[in-house]
Amino acid sequence: MLRKHLTDERVEVLIANLLRGGVLTAALVVIAGAILYLGAHPRAHVSYHTFHSEPQQLKSVTGVIGEAFTGNARGIIQLGLLLLIATPIARVAFSVVAFAIEEDKMYIVFTLIVLGVLLYSLFGSSTIT
Amino acid sequence: MNVLEFTFLVWAGSLLAGFLGALTGLGGGVVLVPLLTIFFHVDLRYAIGASLVSVIATSSGAAAAYVKEGFSNIRIGMFLEIATTLGALLGAYLTAKLPANAIAIIFGIVLLYSAFVSRRPRQRSAVEKPPDPLATKLKLNGSFPDAGGIRHYNVYHVPAGFGVMSAAGILSGLLGIGSGALKVVGMDQAMKIPFKVSTTTSNFMIGVTAAASAGIYLSRGYIDPSLAMPVMIGVLIGSLMGTRILVKTHTTHLRLVFSGVIVLLGLEMMIKGARGGF
Image 1 (cartoon, each protein chain N blue to C red):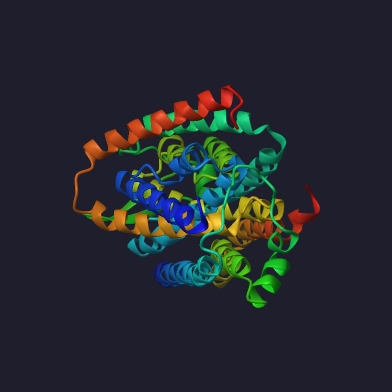
Image 2: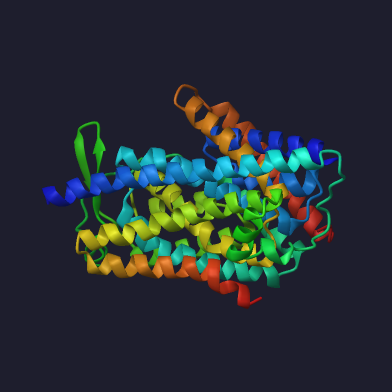
């Protein structure tokens, strides 16, 4: 019981750092992209009144990464947002490991279900509209 | 409006929403979509996408602070996330199927509900009921540090709580909000989990729930980087500021004013939606 309590506490500290690090990294990448974006065409006209969806390369994980590494400002912002979305997913993945260390089979299964739903949304849903 | 003006104004508005949301405990996410659609004439789908992204930022930021305090129950959170993430998938699918005006009306109802629901702890007579067998089997009962040492608690009505969480997930995916108020209702009132544990665990779950619909939003093109950027940065800074000040101030009057604003925005969303304005 004592050992379990100690691992729980250590896991909680690690999770807290993971979340904070993820959000901070995401925000920094978004700000970097924002500086590029605002510097490039500050006086251009914008309107979000009608929905046009996004260009294909900003709608998938691989597309966004490719776009960001070509130095495209909107691609870099989108990469930051992707890092943000990845943060809770990493948290869940980390919990799988934590429950595995505790040898809690039931919660390994529960956590894997949640992780599966998250990964499906991010990688598998683009084929279905 | 040009890019610079628009970005700055959306950033400032999001900052205020995040600040007031954190300060009053009502959450900033609920006012973002009405703010963007009514005042900035942003299409509902773009607004929902930007709002959802900011929900992940504030939830993860706040959860980092709460986790260390030892109030949140990771097992309760993970078990109920099965319900919220599956609900969020369904909700995100419904966003594409339902007409925008119907979504706006549902949004209005949720705004009115979150303004009226009290997130205050209720005085609960601490009657020692025997532990619920299902909750025991799922290892949901826990403990947290209290003034008088470690306090143990039991969890009840697991299926009802699971049901409320599914609904919270659907609304989160449908509207791009955190559904924090409904999550707390599910845990605090249905499952009889202590209020402090309910609120912190709810915050813990919001980010994961939102991530479940974020992937679908991304692939549908609801997440526009140029719009989500000022919203996310604004809400994140605003809510961090609000959380810092929260400890030192009494927010009764502010809560009342902010609830009033939420009611007005809710009515406006419903009226505009009913008139086919989205």
